[in-house]
Image (cartoon, rainbow, N blue to C red; front, side, top):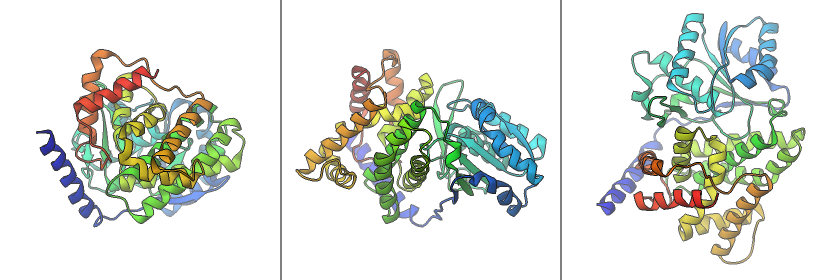
Length: 403
């Protein structure tokens, strides 16, 4: 039965790869550089938007959103703001955003923050255009099917890549199950990459969101199919940028070159995994977010080296190439270079005070984690190594053991 399942998964991925090449993939229009948030009113006017909804979380709502709102006020653009998006946004939050959007007569969205506000705003926009379809019925691939209102994404972290992706990840508050809506219509129209919006990001969040971007790039690069020449190139460039600039941004938040380069890296990695997919790291990480509200970037940072080690020789050639590109190790066998690359990820985590494992995973939750992770990954994710229940559980137990 296991062999039959694996054959089905690989067949599905091969067929989907053919179909995916017929779809209209696009990247958001990037607006980048210091002060680029000042161009938002012009973008709104191009889209003929007279009133816009800004979606964000409480902290960004207090500290950073006013910079954008003042630009809107100066340009005479009306707005309303929802600033109560939580980490791992819930279905209830999405419905509140949708109601406020409709009640206020808004015509477009500005999502400001990390992945959570962007995911919540995307999901709310999907509900606006699909009023008779509940979020749960839009989970999975290509189930939105309608063009969203004009959507501007303004990342305040360099990590999630949500400003480029087809995904919106939502948590069901009743079951704590985290699921993703994945549809080409969820890609924002514009991505405003202003390094000033990440200047005050605390070092710990700089670290974990940066490792989130690295996970996106590495998992996309390792996918056995779906990849294109463009996604491979962007993944490689993103990995190199992150290895060069993440710790600089971590040590000095005012390093605007590092901040700018990390925003570019996150954007590149976001498109790479949008086109090529992610893998078992994300599938397991999402279970931690749903059950324990573990920040997604932190979960990815911890799980990434463990899963890469578990994949073993299946990923040695590709990781060896990344080791060469980043300068981690340029001589030796593929196995030696791959292990050096994984070792450097662990070393980066240590230098940025990211733990090696998690001790908050409850024994009684492991079967549910395995079930959710496998359901997310299979058959859609073109992972280099297919997991079954036994192997997935073993990886989760390694995460606990390394805490």
